[in-house]
Amino acid sequence: MSVTRLKRKHRKNIARANNKQNIIKNLLRTPVLKNVDLEELKSRFSAVAITE
Image (cartoon, rainbow, N blue to C red; front, side, top):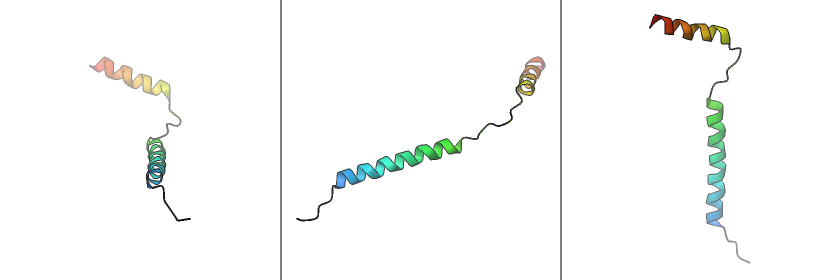
């Protein structure tokens, strides 16, 4: 038997792996919100609305 490679399938597998890596990188790029004080944020927005 001769050795044959499935080139199209190989390219598809590599592309699929690269896509998954890019999705993970994009998810990790977004910052995680921790310890957010909602009342303080609301007061900031209301203060901006009053001054305008």
